[in-house]
Image (cartoon, rainbow, N blue to C red; front, top):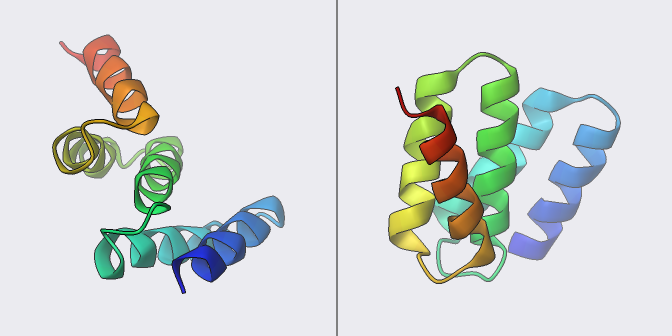
Length: 87
């Protein structure tokens, strides 16, 4: 199911259906946190939230990424983004 949700999110995003993309990616994060797709889903969702101006939500998701999946490339990216945006 997480791989299918990732494909739905990616296809929706490509068609500018951001609501569906965000819902699909967040479903992976929330319902399938142990799946290999979860870190990527979290990073994609955080980027989309940031583009929508939901910076606090994006920051929370990036912080979750660095703590829940610390040994992933996505966590390194999240840490870099958080550092760049630090006040």
